Amino acid sequence: MKCIPNLILFLLVINIYGQENNAEYLELKTKLLNSDSELVIEFNTICFGGVNITPDDSENCTYEKPFYLFWTKNGQYFKRKFSNCKLFPEIEMEKSEFIEKVKTNLFEIQNSEILPVIHEINNSNGKSEIIELEFNHYCESKFIINTKKEQIIKSIIDYQLTTELIDKNTPNDNYSKNQSSILNAIYKLAQKETD
Image (cartoon, rainbow, N blue to C red; front, top):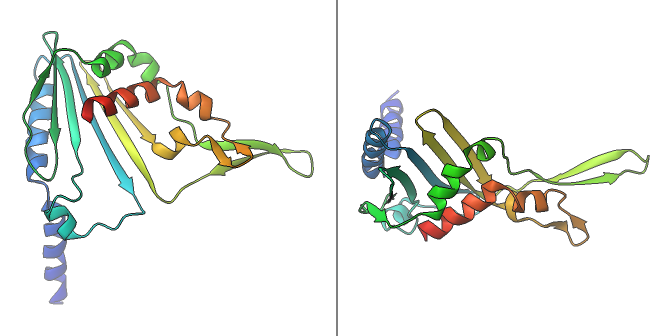
């Protein structure tokens, strides 16, 4: 019975750990959404599997885990980086290809998806079958686009976007569609403006 309070305390510490900057992020996001900002975009990338992170890695900022806010206000462009490592200042940008691309393509973004890695084949019975490739480790980038009228949430899984071949001789049937997607276009621009 004595273990239960210790477990609760342990889980609470894990949940709070690294949240000090998240409070500032949430405060700014709330302020922007309640102000006259025309567009507020949240962007982050999280990787799953493949790498073991220890508490020491987080403390020493080996694993920074950055996330970003982009916004427009009175025709001006802004961005701010947040992380579990340190505080970053708000930056006013002269222009932002990323924000402009999002702003002018909201309908297309709303209706777009990055498609899975698949290949259609005919089996031994002559019937069509679809082979789908899945990974146990990947990185997922997430956009949350807030306008005065709506919120659009889109995710991009890196291997779905970049996998051209399932194996040496088997193409990903969705590779070209994914490469020409508006989601790929805004993803590349977001990466460019967060490097």
